[in-house]
Amino acid sequence: MVYYERGSATDVITDNDINEALVSVIEKLPHKKVLAIPPDFTRFHSYAGRITELTWNHLGDRLTDVLPALGTHFAMTDREIEKMFGETPKSIFRVHKWKEDLVTLGVVPADFVSEVSEGKLNYDWPAQVNRILVEGGYDLILSIGQVVPHEVVGMANYNKNIFVGTGGSEGINKSHFLGAVFGMERMMGRADTPVRKVLNYASDNFANDLPILYIQTVIGKDEQGKLVMRGLYIGDDYETFKLAAELSLLVNFEMIDKPLNKVVCYMDPSEFKSTWLGNKSVYRTRMAIADEGELIVLAPGLREFGEDKEIDRLIRKYGYKTTPEILKYVEENDELKNNLSAAAHLIHGSSENRFKITYCPGHLTEEEIRKANYNYADLNEMMNKYNPEKLDDGFNTMPDGEEIFYISNPALGLWSYKGNFN
Image 1 (cartoon, helix red, strand yellow):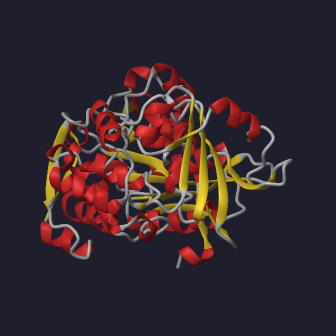
Image 2 (cartoon, rainbow, N blue to C red):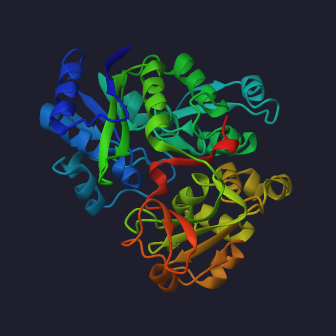
Image 3 (tube, rainbow, N blue to C red):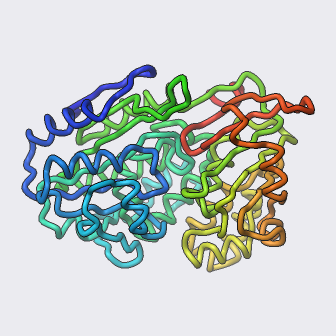
């Protein structure tokens, strides 16, 4: 059921609007003991932190726990919690331990995975969540987050926040690999994808006893380039997500008339410290970049490849290669076969040798970047040449006459040449 819906490509939803919507919906539902599941700091711009803070302001001690949906990411620091969640007490924050604190609600059968993957894969999929969801005694669980184009599932959020954000290694690995093998270009910007169908199967068959209320945001930019909330949808079913996904396509998806020869992306150092996250610059632009074109990634915060030590090691060992190469590595190496999310990420981060990817890292060496199969350029030189403070989002003509397409935060959208999306 959709309890609240508001949004358009021009709407601006304020704190007062959000607060009124939250209060009006929550007061209709049991809420003596409430768990909030927002994203972590890597989704700082989702507005989920402010929504969590407004929920705390209304519920007080009835909001007993906040469990950031870390997936495989590092736990949030105190500083990140303060910046993202404001006055929400740090004492109620819990850390999702994705290798340990798990309950399996059920298993999606292999024949279903085979059907939705068009026969490409034939494994079952465990629907796992952090045990606190099942054992915490909550009468309301608030799943909070932004709906935006996504490389693994097509459109982010909804039950991905639950089954991946608070899920376990096997489910995360297999869902990532399913999306990668099916093909990112067939996934991104679409609500109905193989990964989403698997997650929906889990919701429909195994999670009916969990009192989950989804609070979905759609974030865009106003005429001054400031981030604003364009949509807010609150409900407990797929329709809530679908409404947000439809608006996100209008707000977050930019269709380009011609393939782009050079794209420059800036990755905020407070958010993007790894290629695991920084490769959103690759995922979100790949459908817009011309054959033989170039993507330049300005990454002053980049200091590692994976958010997890083992994944970091695997990325360094195998590098970002073409899909056939990675699938062959998976077939021949148990360490990749047993860590399919790492294998999926290596596929996601590749240009398939179609265009050039040049990383300009703040902390990794040229040798490390080139060994991962990327091109390298000096960060200071490239920041001087392509100064983010002087560039506008979209097309820019440089002093030497070069035309580039600049993106200040690729995590907020999806770009495609019109001929590549139908």
